Length: 352
Image 1 (spheres, rainbow, N blue to C red):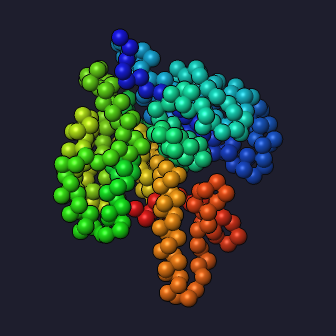
Image 2 (image 1 turned 180 degrees about the vertical axis):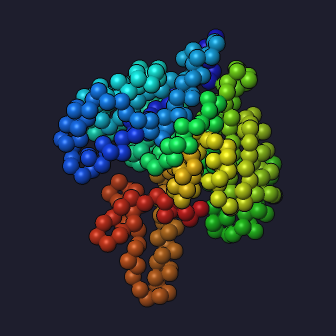
Image 3 (image 1 turned 120 degrees about the vertical axis):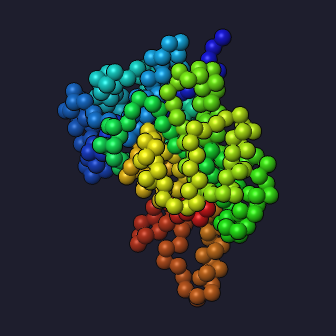
């Protein structure tokens, strides 16, 4: 009988390795200079990136008795095939059992996620992560700034931390808080304590981790934490939801809105997933972190709310907004700064 829990992780080269210098060359000097630099340095081993320790630890599961091929990692990269020489040279140097890859020369890698049956996708590319989320795949935009010294001290036990609302669960409850305030939110959660929360983008991944642990028992060195801004009495619905799903977490932090950073440092997470950039940026000062964007449909809904609020605000003041968000050609909300319109999911995420 085959494994019920095999986990496939897709990871970009910038998530696995530290390519900040190379990316800067690409941004400032263009594709040709970037490719020339990579070719000249293709025998040089790349340094570990923000997702390296998590990938290394998860692949370690395959070394346990009877757990061969339980975790598979595939490289999904915008780089050209020529760059694969340096990437696989570095993979071999670190002893990572990664054999499969796509090097798409700038094309979207989104179509290949389902082809590989990816359960979790880590990338520095917002568009690719958005496409994964829209397809129902757990994915995160990995922060490109991280505490490298702290990452090197992480042990072999796999430690993953998840936010609750809009990550493990839907953002249904958060909308009540946004629209009606804390008192209404707590009353709603209290009255619906026995009603399971709808699934969020990472629910299926958490369930797969739970199947893995049920099948393999204590042999699997993994510890999972829920780190949420909720507090009592809103905690009850969360615990009852996890019980209904037949999953569990090892540690739960109900922080009531205080900073998550030091708790994540103390927990020693290999990766923290949150839906708000303000949280992931702060967390990345202590542990590797990745932001989970809303599905495109949800972003558009939030955009319309924001648009309505801004119009009502501006009609009252008699002024036109100079920082009013416009809808991009790809339907991504953007914020206009000066003459430049830049994608902005964070502004919308902060609303909930």
